[in-house]
Amino acid sequence: MSNEIHELMIGIGRAAKDAAQDLARADTAAKNRALLEAAAALRERKVDIAAANARDMEVGREKGMSESMLDRLMLDDKRIEGMAKAIEEIAALPDPVGAIMSEWDRPNGLHIERVRVPLGVIGIIYESRPNVTADAGALCLKSGNAAILRGGSESFHSTKAILACIQNGLRKANLPPAALQMVPTTDRAAVGEMLTMTGYIDVIVPRGGKSLVERVQREARVPVFAHLEGICHTYVDRDADAAMARSIVLNAKMRRTSVCGATETLLIDRHVLKTHLPAILDALDAAGCEIRGDAAVQALDKRVHAACEQDWKTEYLDTVISVKQVDGVDEAVRHINTYGTEHTDAIVTANQATAEKFLAGVNSAIALHNASTQFADGGEFGMGAEIGISTGKLHARGPVGVEQLTTFKYVVRGTGQIRP
Image (cartoon, rainbow, N blue to C red; front, top):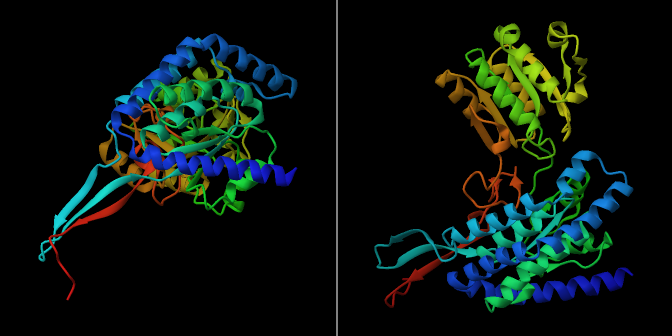
């Protein structure tokens, strides 16, 4: 079987590499037509997509998937429409390919340009979320990259149905359907193959649980855009507006607990523990959130369970939050930089100087002032969608959109110069 998987993946890789060359030369109009046709197909085939998703949901329940994971997997009319709109937004973005990032002239008359070009072939390995198929496929297409998608076994039928819509768009725009391919097997050996396909794949993007991302980072011989976990924090400062703090914390935790931008730990300045925290805890409790706190927080509210050291290191992705009292912004920053995962962290304060100290001090890819951590999303950043949130510090950081899926080359124009 391993040899069969190897041959299968090499075939997919060759087709993707060939398609990437054609896509890199495609004009903006053709790429945009493919995207708009794909969005139209999603709407036209929403009944088929919903039926495929229902099959995946049934299997997920049989496997005992948690409610938060089932929420990630689920597609309804609203989410299908959301995918279609995201693709249309990506189509409306400026084409990054060919954009001149900078240019200058040398004393010898050479004119030098730094020009955006596609990365090539992008391998995307993900779990549960079938919308990644649409988001990643559209972003890769717009940025001139071919993509190989390996969705989780739990989203197999949903992924296949969505992929068919995007490939339909490629065909209608006379672009190669092999520019977006799905690994047609749930055998995990295919993942191992992707991680070592240095001759065919230019970068790997894992989106999934900690074990998946750890495996990719451990085994990959291909460059990786990744974040290991989303242990996100909201810090309520002593100068925070109480009503604003309540609203932001409730949204940051409970809007969707299954997303990587959900707040997992609430930090609160000791000076406003008694004035600001009770209303926040009431709102969280009313929304069905379990609260775990340190001794100071427990003393304030009998509903609070004792937090342990592991709680500060946990991405719950569920209706659970840990709460800790801190002595000012410096201690908040130290806690975040110690226990966080450099993903997304927020401060609520009316003090601009304190806000700037926090924003400069946290090591996060995304740092927010007076806003919910749930804004950690490429669509909310105006990118149309994202292929993921990268917490690395090389090449791409934060939401990975069309610009982050390009690299550059230098184009040098002369008039016959030779080097002395």
